Length: 65
Image (cartoon, rainbow, N blue to C red):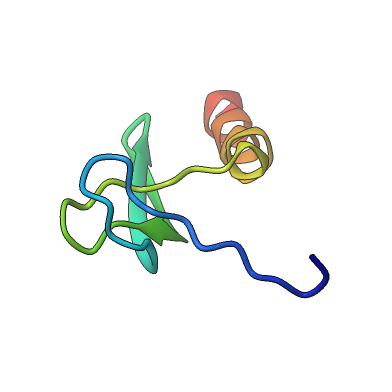
């Protein structure tokens, strides 16, 4: 499986996910990030790396203020 890109599909409607800029809100602040999302129903896929990395970093910065 070298150089094979994984294609994610929506569990709700089966459409292929496409890169979409999503705005996240936390403690009155917001930040945008591009994630795979369903073009039909809008459900987004948040990877473990994103949740434990960037999102945890922003959460920590917001709580420290």
